[in-house]
Length: 388
Image (cartoon, rainbow, N blue to C red; front, side, top):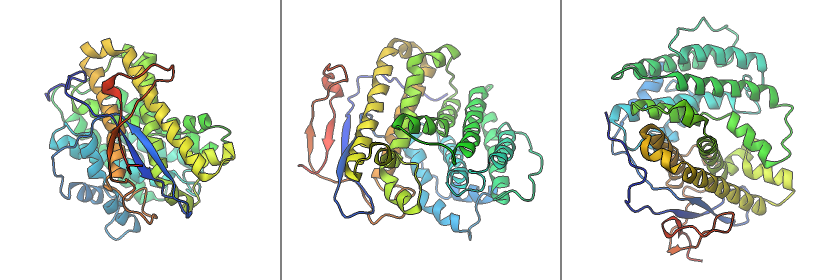
C-alpha cells in the first residue's frame, strides 16, 4: 500500500497565475493569464517506449499509419507523470496506456466530420462494443462496415488488457465506479452523436454542459483511486460540494485545452472551443472572447476552492476522499503544465509557436473571492509573466 497523502499538510504551496500569449491565426498579439493555485509535481519514473509498444501491440495504431506521428507527439507519458506523480512505475504506465486509449478514441469520434461521432446508430454500436471490453468481456464481432473497424478492435483489446491489470492487484479492487464512469462517458459520446448536428449553443453554460457530458476525465480519477487501493463512499460522492469539485476540475481541464488549442481547432474548422463560444454567443471580438474564457476558467477554479473548503472536515478523516480531491488538483495543474511546458504538441501542432508561456518576473497579487472576502495569504497567487 502506497502512503496516503495529507492534503492539509503545512508544506508551503505556491498558487500561481501564468501569463501567456494566445495562439491564434490572426496578427494581433493577445496576452492573458491562467489562474492555477495548485502545486506542480512530477513522477520520476521513466517509461521509455512502453506506451508506444503497448499501443502498437494492442492494434490501436500501426507504425506506418498517419496517426502514429500524433502518438509520438502526444506526450501522453508526460501527462501521466505530471498527474499520477506519487504512483509506482506500473501504475504510471497503466495510467499512460489508459489515457492513450482514450485519446485515440476521442480522435475517432470527437469531430464534426466523424462517421461515428455524427451517426447515432453507429455510435451506439461502437460504444456498446467497447463497454463490454471495459468490463473485461470479449465483445461480439464488430460488423465489417463499421468505420475504423481495426482501430476499434484495438481499443477493445486495450480495454480488456487494462481491466485485467486493474484486477491483478492486491485485495479485491472495487471497479464499480470505474465501470459507471466509463458508461457515462460512452453515453455522452452517443448523446453527442445525436446532438452534434442539431445543438444550438446559446450560452457558455450550454457549452459547459456539453463538455461535462462528453468528458473522459472522471474515469481517469477512478483509475487513480483504484491504483492507490482506495475508495470513496457513496455518501461522499453524493455530497453537493464533492460533485461541485468534480464539475470544476473537469471544466478546468477542458477550458485549459481550449485556451491552448484555438489556432489548431480554428484551422481545422472545429467549433467546440470556449473562446469560439464567446465569439458566437456574445458577439465579441477574438481578444475579448479570449479574456472572457480566461475569466471563466478562473471562476471554475474558485468554485473548486469554495467547495473544498466546505467539506474540509470530511477530507481530514476520509483518506479516499482526500486523495480523490488531491488527484483532481493534480489533474488540473498537470494538464496545464503538459501544454505550458511544451510536453505535448497535441493542441498546438498547427501552431507557429512552440512555447506559449512567457518567461520573466514574479510578483505577489491580491485575490478576492466572489463575495468580496480577501483570500488568506497562503492562497494569494504569484504571477509569472512578462513583468508588465
